[in-house]
Length: 159
Image (tube, rainbow, N blue to C red; front, side, top):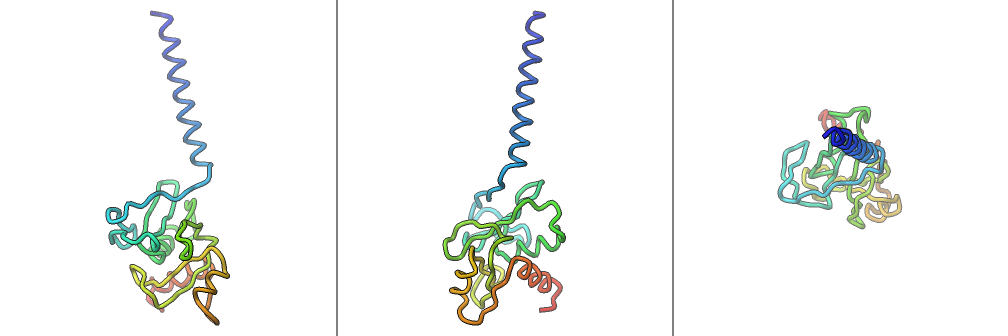
C-alpha cells in the first residue's frame, strides 16, 4: 500500500504538468477564430442572431470569444469595452472577396451604402487593391483605426 501513494502522487503531478503546459501553449500560441453557429449564436453587442457569415466578426480576449453579426458591432464593442485595446488578443473579420477570416487590425475597410446586418455598411478586405476594386475610383479606403474611429463617432451620434 505504501508503494501506491508515491505512484498516485507522481501520476497526479504528471497530469497537472500536462494540463499546465497545454494551457500555457494555448495562451501563447497563435489565436484563431472560432466557428460561429449561424442561426444559433447571438451578437455580443446588439443581441441579434448571427445569420450571415460574410458579415460576422470575432473579438478574442483573455476571457473568451465575443461574436458579432456585423463588423460595426464588433468595433463598437471594442470601443465600449476595450477602448485602448487592453485585453484584446485578436480581432477577426471576413475578407469580402475570399470570404476567409482575416485579422481585423490589418484589414482595409470600405464603407458602402450596401446592406450589412446592422447597417454600418463596412466591408473588409485583405489588401488595399481589393478594397479599391470593390469601392471604385476616388473612394475612401479606411485602415482599422479609421474604421474604429468612424464607429466610435457613430456610437456618440455625431455622424
